[in-house]
Length: 165
Image 1: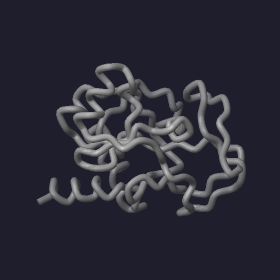
Image 2: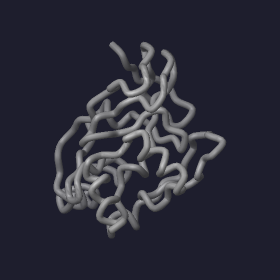
Image 3: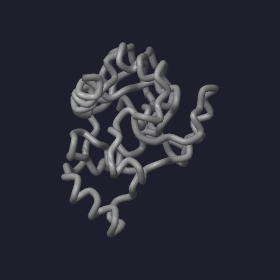
Image 4: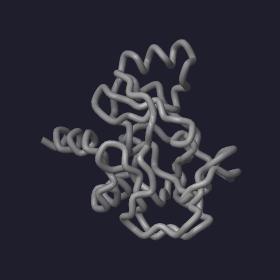
């Protein structure tokens, strides 16, 4: 197995590399149940899923992450990113034993839903933002780094293109 779930300093559990990953290498395909925006909101309201748990993969499309995929923690200095729809890949070389993290804010387009979503951050990175939210909470220099690394989902690329027109 290339990945394992273990105790984490960021949250109770996290996903760790059980082998070295090279920059650009696919780490994991995020999986789970596909939900429309309305179904996602309904499941949050009835507490079937937590507000922090769905992964946005389209303008009005989400994944209620499976038990493994939900274990990847956020970091303001992430070593992984998500591209295409839900492909987690290494932003840098990741040595065996390292916790694999991605920046949750890079998956959430500013919207009515995102106004309700904010999280305290416990990543411990020197550049920790302390509170994370949607894409608008990412500093411009960090956003440029993600764009240059192609660490954006397809729907997020479309959003950025339309926002700059």
